[in-house]
Amino acid sequence: MEFITPEQDRWHTVADDQPVTPAAGTLLSWAQWREARATWPADLKAGVVFPNDADIEELADDLPRLDLVVLQFPKWTDGRAYSQARLLRTRFRFQGQVRAVGDVVVDMVPLLARTGVDAVVLRAGQSVEIARSTLGFFPSYYQGDVHQHQPLFKREASAGAAEVTQ
Image (cartoon, rainbow, N blue to C red; front, side):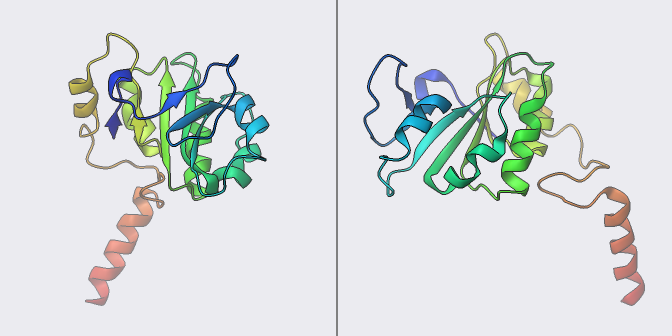
């Protein structure tokens, strides 16, 4: 998990009232991307800030042209972007960076990682050190996730079957 601070972010946004000029490291809003994608150079990867109330399938055809998808958490209790992240990783096999922004708190970090988010911008006042430590709280989980697809009972059954055949 990468913890991003605004000072060290290599991506730059374009204000809504400014013209969009294709350049490396350009992070566009969903509206800006929809306007620019037809003329965006095919060999220049972009980043898109995707709203959490939109259907992630709308972005599917554009994913090969993106290096970054930023998912928004307007409130830490709003989990729609978790589903978007999981779909990006599992259904659409997106290999670029999936970043969580907004009201992202330390307690969310393990679930963000399990759903496919690999970078976060923590809410002001949150500790990066504590957030990092949360990633090691549990050695494994019962449910499957984007990294380990099988639930624990299937993993254990497979391990038991392997031991019997040896």
